[in-house]
Amino acid sequence: MERYGSLIQIKPDHEERYIILHNNTFPGVLEQIRNSNISNYSIFLRDFPEGKMLFSFFEYTGEDFQADMDGMAADPLTRDWWKLTIPMQIPLESRKEGEWWATIGELFHMDGDRKSPGDVRRYAGAVEIVPGSVSEYRSLYETIHSDVLERFRKSNMSNFSIYLHETRIYSYFEYSGDDFAKDMDSMMDDPETAAFLNAVRALQKKLPGENEWWLEMREVFHTD
Image 1 (cartoon, rainbow, N blue to C red):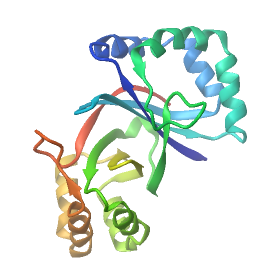
Image 2 (cartoon, one colour; image 1 turned 60 degrees about the vertical axis):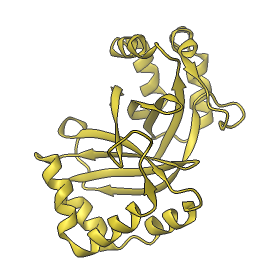
Image 3 (cartoon, rainbow, N blue to C red; image 1 turned 45 degrees about the horizontal axis):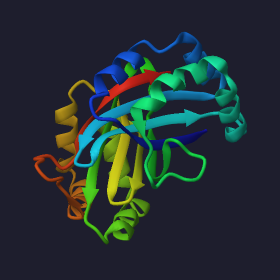
């Protein structure tokens, strides 16, 4: 199984239409997604200084990703769907040749104690990192201590992935607890985890006009 994170912007004043459209996704499009071996597919939305950004996360369980994507692109109903969605979107200049959504690299992943889709809430967020600190930020997660991972699991987090695009981090995870704020605060009770999170925060910066470090993104589409 492979995980994919990707980004694209949405044009100004198209947010409401995009959300309504994805709340009423063609059943045949959803079927094609499943037939293309894509599952646990979510799209999240957030305003940023450069505009409205869409961040997607999905899992791929097939054996030939490109062949499955080509099959999706050849599906007539999916092509009709794209005729509605593509005019709303602005692809990033950083995307690779042949991409519409820009694929971004996974910096970190923790499976944790994964639960069934109906037993979790999905979260996505974004944060800026200090320019020039990408290597240090990456190193912190590459050398993360097992005790810190255990604290994440005890805080009811699972399927936790972090993606890097330029100087912004995008995260996705699933939460299966009953008190999100309490579980997140409890991580600071463990000295090892607190030291790790403080080291990470030292490399982060708040976006202009924002009071929070991590900016939660709104889920506007999901299919299991």
